[in-house]
Image (tube, rainbow, N blue to C red; front, side):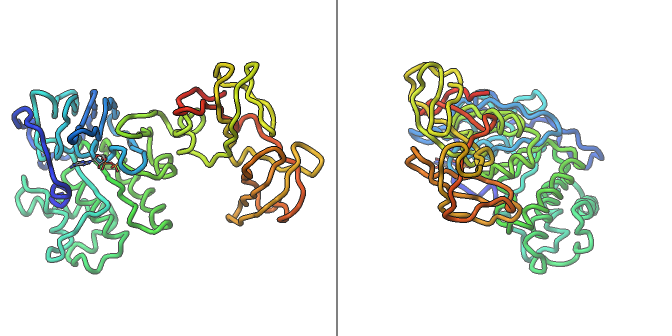
Length: 385
Ligand code: ADP
């Protein structure tokens, strides 16, 4: 936790006086998941805004994933929730109580918030038990060790309590970090890219295990990630951010099926993109003509087709094409096809068993359900149904 507090220079604006929110949670037996709200939060560094008008509601005991490219403000929002950064404007509320705002600032240790970070560091000279007990300062040493042991048991590492961190694998270190975060029984758990240091298979199992532990701990949770798949797998809801702003909020299926703009669409699936101009209420392409998604005639648009919706047929059906390359991805194959009338090749994702040979002539057709149409400029238009 301390490493996190020191992780970045803090340039806090003079804000309200620091006051405690409520008594520290101490050794209460039950965690009450907290309700966390951000209201019109801004964070400015010099002339640039890291956050602009962010309003979010994280329901008790739910997992919310903050998703977006590097530099879009995810960590800043987390640090503001934790209380190690102050908003330049706006408010943060935990259980309807203002913990950061124009007139009030509750310090991190009084917020009932637990933290877990990618670059967490365990103290090498402390036993694993003492590493976990480290944040339990409001308890006696005996109580703290009992709570730490319980947290280690929860993450399945109780048997390592007396050992030292150097014996742990990367995944085990991550579990200890999780135990340290949940040991004080926080109402809110904040995780910043918690699995990005792990290899892909370990990451997968750690995600599942972490979700199970978080649910069992009954904490409200924010997970920061730049990985759309991770966000969709972990989040009860997903918040997509770009350049300090919230682009779209919803469940994973909502964001996947109805992305608000082309940035959101590109985040959630691999797309084939074909430029066109809307005419007669339709978007015409060499692969067919589609609904204009509410765009006015004359609008420069991009017709997007998900790779799974680009179908390859026998030559003579659909639009003529030729297979340029194929890639083996396990159960599915990715096929690159040059299509008559299109400047760029398209990609089709299909059953590996059906992948045609490189060089073969094929027909190409599009599943209408895999089509999204957006305006080309800034991409802030509604998709087709
Ligand atoms: P993310 O977590 O999405 O990668 P960050 O929240 O770390 O994004 O950063 C958002 C923006 O705020 C970036 O442009 C970053 O350079 C800037 N920023 C973050 N912290 C500071 C700071 N202490 N001083 C100046 N600029 C900062």
